[in-house]
Length: 379
Image (cartoon, rainbow, N blue to C red; front, top):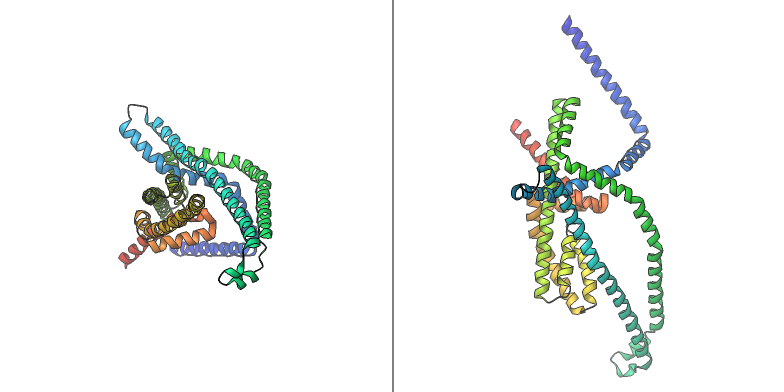
């Protein structure tokens, strides 16, 4: 009798769960816009926190290496807690110093290069206008055809000058909006940075607290898989950031050596820029290549062509040998899936998607492989 009543209770509970799930699904299906707006609102108000978590995961790589070095070689200098604080501070200073230094060196040179290119183009159009008035086309091969090409070089020069002035005015008018947007994001950036520092300083405590919460509120069959997923994602992200840094250093060094051998100007500056932009998977170095080509063009156009040919060859070497071996091997992700993750991540979330696509794909690949092996062993 007791067993039969218990069976009826289980059936009733199961039926109640099915009914509740069905009602919730029906309500959710009829209010998708409300749910999407609520998720977007929660995502927006929590923006400083998740940005801080991402910053903490990025900073944890250099900070962890610095802390390990201090604990191994500088135990006499200060306590373990001070080692943690010093490692965070030094990691922040190193990253900020790198980006600020590259910006200070490259941006003024790039602006001067663009100005010089525009001056050369305007001067060339002036020379063509004068040549068009004085040249005797009858003395040239295809002279009749050239004479029939009625090109108003003066008008082209005026149009180029007006376009340049309009672009400069547009950029100048956009500066207040950029500054206003930057000022509006200062609080977000500051809160994110403070939260990242707190996460790094108390990472062991936070991990213990998260495990306690999961064990207290979730069944064991959910707690263990969640902890495993979090562990794999954290380890994969750290390996990915370390691999990206190593790959960027290798690419920047090879670029600098090649440019010095080929006697291409701005070798250290452009190589450093390409190394930094290479932190953006697969496509970052091409951004540095465009900036470098503009700078070299103002010095020697032939060297610019040599630089582009050299960089294309170096990119093929980097994309087919260095990147898959350094990054793909560290996160145990085949090169084909690295390219797929970068492509899909970039289309979904832009630059942030490119940065996070590879570690997310690597973590998913690792977890799926583990689950597949367990399922095969079970059968």
